[in-house]
Length: 210
Image (tube, rainbow, N blue to C red; front, side):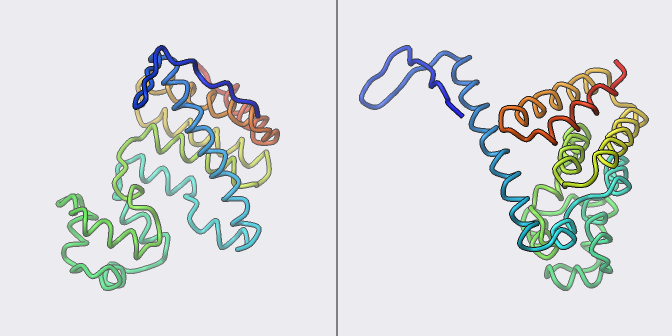
């Protein structure tokens, strides 16, 4: 893909000054490149490690809905692994009572504790601290589309996620932002040549009801 770099307003030996719009465009292109690399890496991981093993880290629709209902991400991921509180606490080196307080929301959990829990669960730490419903809905749709399942299953899951997002009282502005994010993602798929992902996501977007 050919990329035209923005033209600087002025330059010195140590600095380059850009228009704000050019800077924002440059950052957006870098983020798109990172997303495309992530898709390639995920597909390569599935090819080498096996689809079933790789998808152990994909949230199901039911698991996402639990997060949308503000259930503890630690509890959701622990139960996804099939572990008891005591087992996870032991692996992470935290007390069972402290883990119980984190899962019930009585304590937020220190950064060190959440990092230890994330390492034990073998997931990025940010998955245990995210409280943004819009981001969770977007991530779930993106994840499901890129998982390589059937188009019909992806579209059905899209309907489910959007319906759950609406049913949980999402504001109209959040719904509009979710749709805009999905449109941006579809455009990235189109530019990067991900024809199947572009087609599936475009069909999901058309099913929105403004």
